[in-house]
Image 1 (cartoon, rainbow, N blue to C red):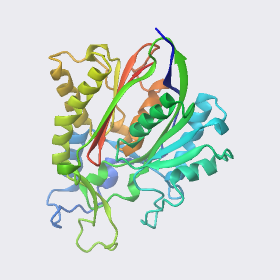
Image 2 (image 1 turned 180 degrees about the vertical axis):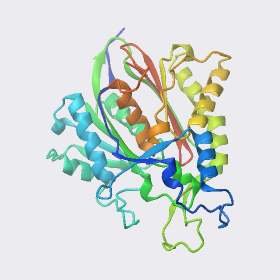
Image 3 (image 1 turned 90 degrees about the vertical axis):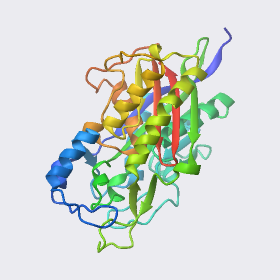
Length: 360
């Protein structure tokens, strides 16, 4: 077989905020329905049902002094150290996010200069040919950044690419919306490098889709559910949870199968499935549906590492954080070895879905 260049992960990093927010911390909230009516159920009933549906018991929020570019920088430092590279040799810095630098007391979008430019500045990179740009693609943003990095590397345009996924959802969630309990903050970063190999390694294949005709409003920005909310002009992240759940269940398993077929890989050869940590029960349902597409009844134990029960849904940060914890042996009962094949999958605002196969 002729040698070729492949895109390989050589370093990972993450920033997990220190502030733990448990479900019980929401007992003091006033929750309203979409029609502005206060929910009749007690908050204890609401959080008990929430835990049952999502498996989320706690999540992480940043401290008041931090913004998205800060935590992106922290994760980037971790990844660069992990890869043991000279940061001046980076060809691209891609930062996937959705809300920019939202201050604690100011909801206004702040993305000029770009978050990637701010990260490059914080890293003190002087090389003008380290191109820094942002990628807003919903929750699948980090994985889409990895896919773009693969194209840069395969084309010969880049040898080293830093891809970051970061969001601070606690600043854009409506405290009067039950869905606010889903959201958390965090950042994950990955260094991709070109590696020459006789056998396929690193990224083997990927596939993405955008279903905007029918599903563009599954996630959107809207006003607080509380009619007389004091911040009446503020917009918050809103979600059509029931329809989004159904969309994901119908489309994510098939998208994974499509990517596996494109990569000439069978599901039985997959060691781990790293999926966006959106909802524990939803991810389990997606896994079951995926195996049913292959008429496989027995799902291997520990094939799908999960962090959502204690980290919540941090949007673009969930998958790179999960990967970082996995590769650094910080997930109990999970390990990967050279030659293992991983599948990455994400779904989110757009609606967008992307999938990638990867050989360690």
